[in-house]
Image 1 (spheres, rainbow, N blue to C red):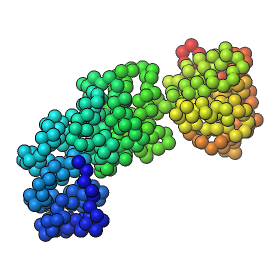
Image 2 (cartoon, helix red, strand yellow):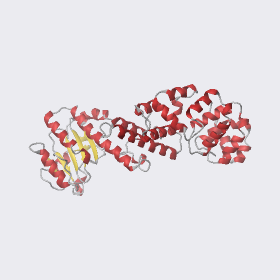
Image 3 (tube, rainbow, N blue to C red):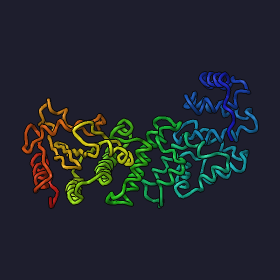
Image 4 (cartoon, rainbow, N blue to C red):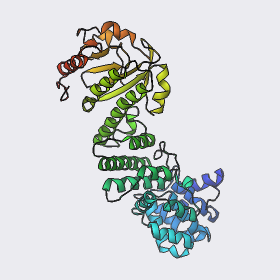
Length: 426
């Protein structure tokens, strides 16, 4: 159903006529009418928000040739935005003239309520979540999912997916898999890459993300396995910890907090998985550390993984960003930074001591020696081990893992956090 885009000189002529308003459209040579949708509905959308321009174009539509209704239907669907003036004017025209459309387009329009721009994307989203039926129907009208992927319609469909999942009335068995199938695996920045207006993309992102978070929390009340949803959302819109501008002011703070909580847990669990793939001197000792730190999971605000050279490929397989050691650590070393808000801790996988510090109390000359959460600059651990001794001094302490080390660390966390953090039984 595609037709060649107009030549640059033709496009400029059409755009110039649209820029003159309704008069420019009325005076436009008949030969240019077939090319109007390219300048009206895409790119800079010249005249798209001007009702007089759109109506003047539709008034002359009979001059655009016998295939014009079919071609207009195609442009309308690809560029569909429910709250857009041109979308709704064209939808009205197509409703009044639907009898001149080919039968396959009439059938598709009927099944998906295509000429109702507010309802159609939700119908398409529901069908896409249910299986391959939508993709098959798209193929029958000469489209492809590849053609739809960068379209404004795709942003509307993904918003519809989020709306359906957020409402909870749709029993979708595998919404993650269905979205990946709809996008044919091209999930990275999928909504940002569409041709929809910025405000439409922002709304679609918010609804899509919040819909999946709502769905995940219904099917997994205790957040035991948010990983697949987390992977999808951070692919569609990147990691909120490193790209906050893609999240703040678009997605609600409450939703961002949930996602960052999932990311923190994922980072902590990734640390243990990476360590398990590296040489361990004593498995029982390591099991004790894992049990101890997992008890603090709900109190951790942020977490950051730092690995030695041999841990890099394992950390990469976790699909998270991480830091690297450049000194003060062996190739098999792996570190986990835990941020409790007013107290931080660096735990290691070998015999190295656990270091705890209060950033507000550390001397300014030493503060740069401690690792920072989300800092990908290679870190030299050797600097803090010289300052973090067995006694609290200069805002920090280092605790070796022998004797009642759990009680020692727990005491420091309780005494040095404003909330007096101490999990039950620790």
